Image (tube, rainbow, N blue to C red; front, top):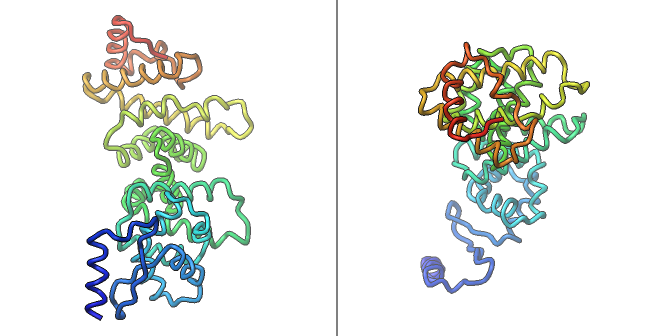
Length: 306
């Protein structure tokens, strides 16, 4: 057996397995590392429901990076059934509590959960699966969920907000999803102070938050639509006010940096009207003193604001 292991290790070191899939199966003693080809792994996973929880955990805790690789980067659709497998989600929840998940895989997993919860109609048949996705999402996003719970938010809302904030590689889209959920899920509790408390808990750097929020018109451009209730409209307004107060609370140098970012975003979008939630010409000069002074200075240098 030792000779067999040594021969295998020598083969790996010499790089003689140059085929596309060089993960060859090696049958070792119980408790030793076992590596599978993608076909063998897929066959095992199709039988995951018949495995004991211990065996399923052992398999997934060793193979989850390869599984995510197949689903998200190789885009092998034959593995996609796992994302709606109750047994897989239950065991993977245990795995991610104990093992780190790469950033890219975290975003992909959050994106799947977000899209399923948002776009898949809730039915009696998928009720339990949605429940498992919330549990899985909580395990994937332990720290942000804990921060949000510290802001006295409902557990399910805290989980969903944490998922939405890391569900895209585009940070502006993450901020849009986060703010939209805040304003529409619990509009009655989103006061200016509550919004500020949440942002303080969740964002160490606020430039993207400020720019993303001010250029997100997904609610403000639909004020006349039936789904935008007075409560949602007020929550959206409170979010905007919270962002402006955060901006005003910064030191002048940092305010200027954010204002440049706002101007650059406006220019990149073509300087069109309606792109921004506010007009910087109409800011309350008594309330946002530093911000307005710096805007005037930058305008004198030719900087254009919404």
